[in-house]
Image (tube, rainbow, N blue to C red; front, side, top):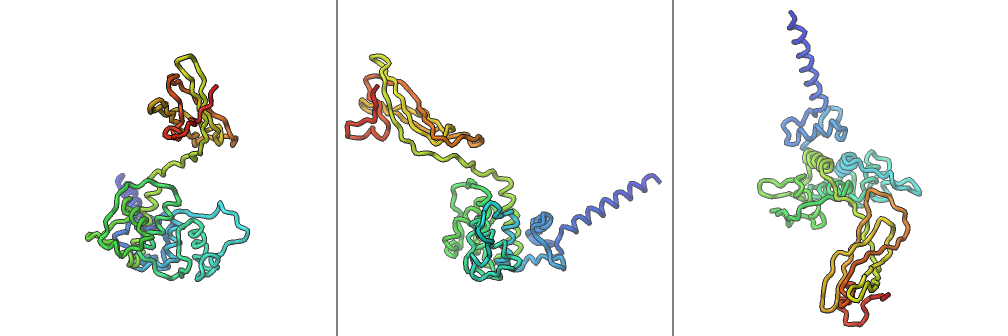
Length: 315
C-alpha cells in the first residue's frame, strides 16, 4: 500500500513534464529540421503562434515578419536617441504604414543600421541572402566580433549580391548558417520561416556565447619633442615629451635603433585603462633614456631626412 503514493507522484510528474513540452511546442513543427530551435524561441517569447497554435515552418518569410523577428530577438531599441518629433515608419520607408503592427520594428531596424531597403513593402518576401545580411547587421549591433580570416567557397557564388557577401561569409564562418551538401547557399531563394528561426536562434546563441572585441581607447596623434642634456662627457640624457588627451595616457621608449651616427628613439603610446574614468584635461607627459654622447638622438621621422634638423632641443 505504501507504494501507491510514489506511483501517483511519478504519474503526476510525468504529466507535468508532458504538459510543459506541449505548452512550448507548435503543433506543426514536429520532425522539422529546426523543431527544437523554433520551440526554444517560442519558449523565450520571441516567436508566437497563430490561433491554431501553428508556426507554418515551410511558409515564406515576409519582410514585416523578418524585421520584427530580428528586432525582438536581439532586443534592439532606440532608447538612447532623442527625437525632435516622434519618428514614423514613413519617414524612412516610402511604402510602409505608420500605424501597422510592424511599423515600430522597421523604425528600430533602420536606426540600428540593419540596412533595410527604403522601398520595401511589408509583404515582400525575404530572400535567403537578404535575411542573412540583416541578421549579420543585427549581430554586429551587439558587438564587434572577431572572425577567422578564411573565405568560404559557394558553388552559387555568382548569384550572390556582392553587397551581401561579407555578411554571408561571416555567418558561414561562425556556423550560424551552413551550406547544403553541394556547397550551395541559394541566395535568391525565399527563406522559409523554419530556416529564419534556425538562423535567428543560432545568431542569438553566438552573441550570448562569444565575447566581443574590447573597445580600445583612441590612439592619439602625438607631437613629440626631443630634449638632450649632458650627464657627463660620455653620456647624454634624452627626454621625449608630448601632450596627451588626458592623464590616462602615457608614453614609453619602445626601442632604440642605430643608423650611422644616429640613435633613433622609438616611442609608443600607453593607452588608458578602459575600466577607469579620467578627467578630460590635456596633460604633459615625458619619458627619458640615456644614449652615448657620440650618437645624435633623433625621432624616427627625422632619421632618414637629408636635412640637418634632428628635432633636438639641447640643454
